[in-house]
Figure 1: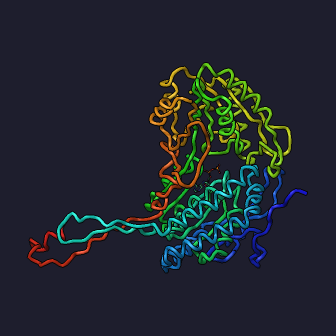
Figure 2: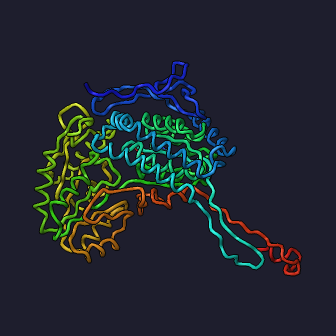
Figure 3: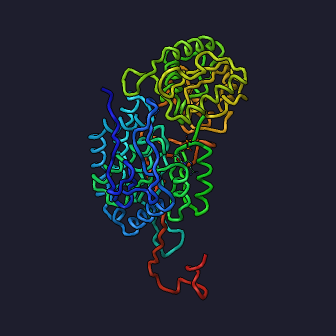
Length: 508
Ligand code: ADP
């Protein structure tokens, strides 16, 4: 029998939603009782009810997080103690990994073969930032004026709003929540309305791990909920992953009260195959780059740039292998292609197939919905696509590759960089010198040489251009959740060192 989602988290005692909000350590309904459906994109069925937080609920969550910050119940602990509880959380994430993996699959339809390693990475991310908590340090700095000692401190910012997308719900939450907590901040999470329940389960584990009430809060809902959170004047920082359009709206809103932002946004990343590429490996990389997660990935290698000498062979291989991918139940480890995560995403991708038809693009494979249950679209490849085509310029977030040809390194670089995005790029060549030249010439936050789509917690991840602001992961990500405080201590030298009525020691 097929596994079932966890359809109730906590009862609130008031007949409220199956999945309530978490505010100040308590599970509560939305004040106006509003709720929305949790939906399975493979079965095309609703399976639970989630509280829909309005502005009053968001305010309560932020006020609770702010109170928890001000009374220092978390930031006042020794960093080593925060680390201990995060390590406990990592253990709990491993204990409950099978359930957390399944719950995300019921929400977004992503394959179990992708979600299992993804969940292991979440526990690893948690341990990484736990380990860094005690390394957070300022610097002892040589003073620029006589008679002082000067140093800096790194302090938590306050309330962090973490707004996450639906494609990798817990993985992308991990990148925000764990550094924020390690640095001593308190957090209000607003998961995507497509994937709210797995985040609530993670928050439940944070309480079990001894992270105090009010330090991790969750408000569920859609854009209205997120917008109320970003606009709240007590939010000190917004960490967001999602579309470029929404990210830009969030940055504008956050600027209204000078909240800091980290934005990890869209991409239209090139995967570049040079004439000497190891073709089997390169085609595997292209397949993984665009068809993993059914293409619903910010780092999808959605533009395949191929040297003319390989062009026909690559097109043929992609069409042949794309048509053979096994679509099916995302809970089945043998499945290679899952559904899109929502009806809205399906409509968006089908809309691009219409555009492709209107633009008369040459479709090698796919270009249509699969005639079966679930929001499936066929793996799709368009060849000889003009760089001006909307399919070559816009992020589709579906299993749709455009293949374009080039003849020279210079042309490959120009085509690769001809985008408003700059999240990632893949380069396939056996020529070491060419690889290094490409690394320097490509304008993107991550460059993969002879691999694609590999990420891990020790290296920063983020984008150039309209792919975002700031970096997540890597040790430096911890500092992105801190303010720097500069300290001047007057060593009390004799007053005659001072000059003028106030003494120049006080002037600018
Ligand atoms: P998608 O439309 O594919 O869900 P988004 O980038 O719009 O992608 O969504 C990412 C996250 O941002 C989700 O949690 C969503 O609810 C939230 N969101 C959407 N619009 C806004 C907004 N105006 N302000 C704050 N959060 C938003």
